[in-house]
Image (cartoon, rainbow, N blue to C red; front, side):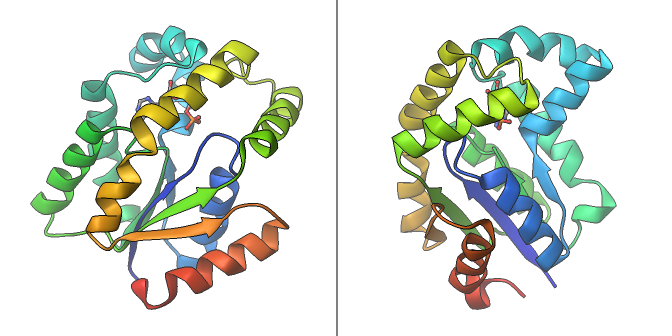
Length: 192
Ligand code: AMP
């Protein structure tokens, strides 16, 4: 099965959880740029050291670093038949960089999923996650910074993807299984 997907949605929309489930269903890896950065911070790599303070503030890591990291990850054999990108692209420059990487490989995206949730629900979920996972960037300031960056730089990307007829919008509120079913049926024949 081939599936080249992007999943978008504000922090707390459940996109990480749903990306993992879609990965199982579709047999392609879920690739979270946030997870890769966190693993590097934990491992004390040079990349991690460059990213840590930026992440803790809730800001975006520079595009040059992020784009190179994604390019390398997509070159790994498990991504040959597809991938679900979670947390990337996050701005217009990253959209272009992703298009360029895929074009070099003779590939295109099959769909871009937008997972929606209202602001109150998001803030509740993020507060729960901060308590459960102890993420150092789940402070009130960093959360509000990330939501503001999402609204300003990332949410507008859906318009461009809609024009390319790639956008699939799904309501992320509700039971986790139910949301997965909604996603699978919304993707329909775009994957496979
Ligand atoms: P996330 O787990 O997706 O919420 O990402 C956590 C943090 O990692 C973000 O707040 C950014 O600092 C950084 N990050 C993740 N993905 C990207 C990206 N595509 N571009 C820039 N920074 C990113």
